[in-house]
Length: 602
Image (tube, rainbow, N blue to C red):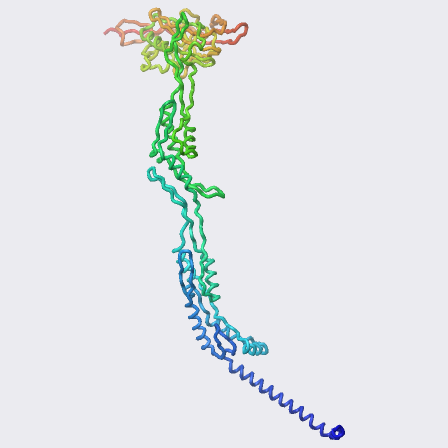
């Protein structure tokens, strides 16, 4: 066999092999030409058609023209947009279509996306994609866009139906009936969050019910029961206010009219309803009540038996009461902490009198300490009347240790209502008729009793000119004038004992006396002789016509006195200790004789 093969001519082999190679080349070339022309024909055929393997919305769309593809997407869009969506809330369910919720299918973009499969401009890559689509379809989902207006409007409509504001707890009064309303939480549809939720459900073609997102809003005021209970308890019975055996009743209707209902929102704590009383109204009530309760303390006045020194009350002492209005208002405010209390004791400040009529023997009034008498015999009946009235206003006065005695305080207003009458008075630089002439006789007497008793002189004023009444039985310079309310005579009881003033007026003898009773401090009082300087002679007599006098009748109303400066010195000792050294200075103006004369006869 092997020898036969070797016998094949070499020339024949050389001829056959090239021919076979040529034939193969021709065949392959022919196949390539056919393939190329086939691919070109394929591309030309599908130039305006979708390539096989392209699906739109799950439907095979291969070989469809653009118009046919648009019709397919339109049909799918109608089905998609009519898809119902169920919106679930705590207050029911609501069904709306995707179209009603603002969904839109973009047909052109969807078709364009389908036609873009295998048409990216790179032939080799496009052919590969086209071939792969034959085995593995390319799925195109209809492109959905959203108009926020419809879904927003739909959610707004739902929120109008479903939303409710939070309601605070409230308290109200109907007469004296207390009514409480509990708090209610608010409810609100979260529109932005639900827009996203609905959009996602439409995009995923989900048919599951959509539970809308809502928010609960808590009320600011939730606590009402404590206020209700306190108010109900307070109004369950009248409130009784008491002091010193007296009672004032506030009925529930009055208390209810005072109530103020408010709110309080503390940080990091629930808000609460509050109840209180209107402070202005309560204050006015207690200010009015104070007018009934308040009274000043009254010091006791006494008569003294000059022989036994026993004291008999002329005016009994009285304890003073002052309602503390501020404390009363606070007391009523605190009632909300103890609403079951229906009786309160008023906060009244009690002021004891400085001089009590209880146990007068404890006052230490047991001897005559000082006395002074002045003379007014020859005065007019009106002047004597005023002296008697003024002196009576001091009979029985007790001056506690350390207290300042004021003449004007006790003499009061110099007017007819207090018993004074018209008489001659010193007014400016002349004598005139006025109410109360003669009162300075009394102030001068009181001054001398204090002066001789060694008491501290606080305020003393001299008369404008020398008056004969005040120098009868006395040296000049020891008078004291007063003019209410500005010009006063004052001295201080600078001892450790009570001083009782007793006055006596003897109209027949023309004397007025001030006696100071108490416990003698053992003082020695030295009064110097008057030092008289700068004497100024008086002027000529003055005659004034007075139609009230008869023709030819003359009446003297002022007596001439020279002007002079008078200085008196007082030294007061207790043992060897000097406790007061006083200079009593008086500057008297010159004063002329003044005569009233009747008119001349016709």
